Amino acid sequence: MSLPRSDRSSRSSTASVRPERRGGLHALQAVLFVALASACAPGFAQAQSGWFCGPLENGYGPFDYRSTPYDKREIVERFHFTPQVRSLSKGASTTKIGGDIGYTLHAFPNHPQALDAMARLGRKLNTGHPPGARYTVECYFERAIRFTPDDPQVRILYAHFLTQAKRTSEAKRQLILAEQAAPTRADLLYNLGLGFVDVGDFDKALAYAHRAYAAGIEIPGLRNRLKRAGQWREAPKKP
Image (tube, rainbow, N blue to C red; front, side):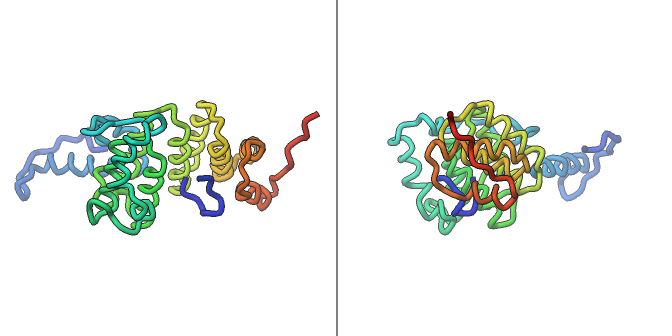
């Protein structure tokens, strides 16, 4: 989840249209082209599923990042998801950083750091479709969810993307779906807590904060955000 570093845990019309030539493209085709282009905007990713966001089949993969051995991950990361790519400072195999991040996400659609990097790149460049990337930022989240719908980390990252886009109700829906995967890792509990703070559900945020800190998370960011909102309470002591 792309968060302050101190807070992180690691219509087209139905009217009849007469085709007319215009610059080698029929007017009807032009109407369809505009309709398709508008589908690129955030909010259309689910409708794009399996079509505009592309097939998941890839020359290498796709592989589930959670269960892929290190050597298979390293083959891609060493040449495409380098530290410079992660920090959005420089491309690796291309001058366009989006190309290297995209390559990584074609091999590992649910690669959490690559998803986060693609979202950060979109915000940095103020675009929904970073140069070099085959698809829109939101498409990469759609592809990850299509590939591994049970991965809570993908949904937490997508929720943060939606929050940044001020699509709060959609973000909350993703957090609820992440909950249904019953995550137990401390970092996921912590980031779920941050996500629920973002959407204003402080009861759930507090519950996840208690679980995350009990599981060993030491980062104070979630606690501090709840304190600033006047919502922090210590966990009840066990009898």
